[in-house]
Amino acid sequence: MKTYLVTFTPLEPYAFGLERNFSFIDGTTQKEYHPYFVKTSPVPEQTALLGTLRYLLLEENKLLKRDFDYTPLAQKRKACIGGESFQFDSCNQQTFGLIKRISPLFILKGDNQIIIPNPMNNIGGKGLFSPMKLETGKFCSRMGDISFPCEKKEGGDELQYNPKDGHASGYYNITAGDVEAPFQTTVLVGNRKNKPAGASDEDAFFKREVHCLLEGMQFAIYVTVNDSENYCFLDPGKTYLAKMGQKKSLFKVSIKEEDNKLEEQVREHLEAQTPHGMTWYYALSDCRFSSPISYSGFAITEKKSLRNLKTFYSKRSNVTENIRKSQQYNLFQRGSVFYENIPSHLNTHDQVAGFNHIIEIKGKK
View 1 (tube, rainbow, N blue to C red):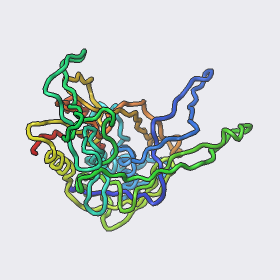
View 2: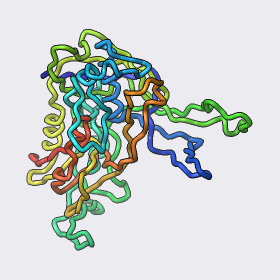
View 3: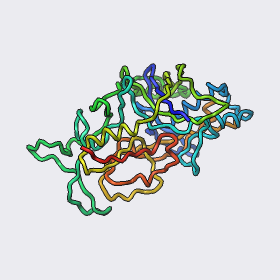
View 4: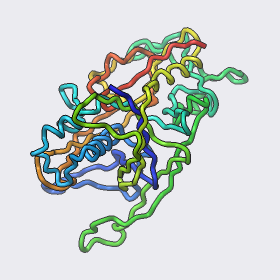
């Protein structure tokens, strides 16, 4: 079993989808409304990365069927990339052939600088990480006793939480020890495809956000690969091209063998900046919990909605007809922080796709 660092470098502006649309019932049919201004995400979802890898593996092992007629190759396909698409509602641990698991997404700057979602309890501004401290006293709430952040005292020099600033966001470079802005976002005006006959020109135009990674940066994940005598993983000596996102933008995919020390490096940096005796938990990835959380401590979280795509391999057809959206799932966004031990609530089945990674931070400063 080997581990590889896989990087995805965008070669043109790109856009990844968000759960921003809504549906309504018109008579007996359900229609989906797309807003005039299309907000997009600057980062791919874990499911998109896993799906791209599975596609490239089929291509590398000469098993790719563009008409989806995989019936004669069902057993070979299953051994190479698994028997089904990733599903949040899977009752059992899913397997994906050569791919044992993938890590949470991070951004690689240069050869070795690691950029992660900025912990939401970071009160260090644009500089070195400094965690939010809690009051020693507790307050009674309908959810139990809870502590609140120490607020900044007027005239005080020590870094403390300022309610006017809100919680931290963006991205943080654990190698350089500062906040990064890795994306450049612009707005494009485009024509709506397949405009219905008789539709007005006003309905034929929309604006969409597109993003660019700054020069020298690339998306990255670690992939742990199962041993196989019949099928091979991607060749580190080759460069691959893949289309990703709403615009089907072109990405360069590169591979090299490297041990996965991501969580170890994140933990080491954050613990070095956390006061001794202080413990908190950092969500390195988006997280879905298998049971409701009864908070007994302080937390800073944001939530997001996400769907996975289900691919049906038994029907000869095109991509559009063979892919269906799942129901909507609500996840805690990566970068969320908890001041209590909540990993026991995590759905461990999702970790194969890089979800549900929470790191315990024990202060050593």
